[in-house]
Image (cartoon, rainbow, N blue to C red; front, side):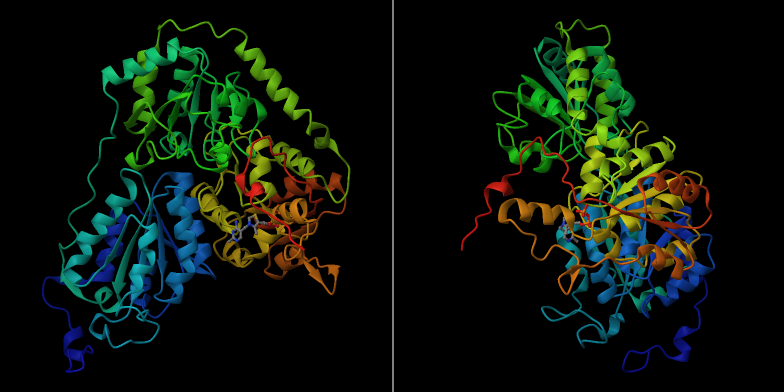
Length: 589
Ligand SMILES: Cc1ncc(C[n+]2csc(CCOP(=O)(O)OP(=O)(O)O)c2C)c(N)n1
């Protein structure tokens, strides 16, 4: 090193028995099974990019770090493996923050690798460093939403920190871990055997036999029990065990937004989603239940009708047993009779086995009343499936989508009518094929997450159903899909508005100020199909409802990415539940 700390010619000569850290790091990531890294370059990560380009790992370069984060998130949701994200310091890391926080709130395993300033310049406020509160502080930005944030202060720590990052991201309640790496660490020499330790295989926490027997007994004796499934059932791949338990004790199954797909849509014990955008039969059976067994859920606000006992859950008097991987979730919002910290698959497997042959109370005409309840609610909108109205009815868009996409195809939503409508009205039959942002509900998730999903399963259909607001938040996804050769489909529900919020404002205040797309007082519509063509992708504008089915079929058969722009009426999704915000708004003069 020179006196100022810059590397000199001498210091870049490699010491015997060593190899540059960046190359060893990519070898290590290969050993861990990493097959793709999503990211965006910067001068702090060039050394790593060089190594990446010479490795077997694929690098998907995006035009915005938020896209890279959502794409890594989508890949993780589709595969169950951690998504890996690479970003530059400062603006790169802050751009990615929304996407990483979105993954965190949905318990998605992710490892974020960021470059940082040269370690020997920490404290001197070098180019792009975040340091106004404390020197060399950028990793702190991720603290509120990462399971752990690491700054690698010594090159020797890199192997240990990487092993910890992959271990923590995947175990317990999964989530993102940040590894912040000063750029000179990538270029440092490390002993050739530096990266030895790999994350341990970790047995999933399960439920003991006595507790399982107690739960099975309580469910068998209950008069109106409900099994309530959250995203943990899907991420834990516990859908078979869930169905086995439900069938053994004749339990109706309700679910959260993230739990959609936990049971085949035609299963006679399936109630549907609860809460504000849920199904009346689901809210009703939960509200009047005497015992709920909730698995892998936060019992979050939207699915619990803002915890108002008049709408979805009335706990107590309903008794609650709650199984979750995270002890912090148990008892947070409701008085809980019994909490079990366990993995959904392991616990449901033990419960299902314990329930076999156990005599349960007569459930009467449960299956008939579920079928009636679901049919009655669908009759409010199913006639719109064939509506020729133009701009289109959203329900017609859903019905064309369902017909066009094979059952094992992925439907990736954003936020807006797309998310709420699919969760409520769109049949999902293959677990894991519905991908949606729940906790942070980030507009812009869907158009980018579909890239990661398609990369994970290139032979399966992947359609992002998104609003025009969400799509135009970051349309450079088209460039990434072209460059990475990912023939995804974006079906844009174009209502020239941030429609969901426009509808809320209109309901309470009689107008939609600040929510409509307008220019000089007139509706402003962008031509997203033309935009797609300008990127070299396919772009289709729908001009009558009958065009959508064939357009979808062609898009799914094409080897190019396609934007389909479908003009749509801004009709709200039905809201059988309750959202407390509606009591908050007050209009003055
Ligand atoms: C990043 C972000 N900003 C704001 C919101 C609040 N929000 C929720 S839904 C919505 C409107 C989405 O509009 P669009 O994508 O056009 O779908 P639509 O509601 O019209 O179906 C907004 C702005 C959000 N969820 N995420």
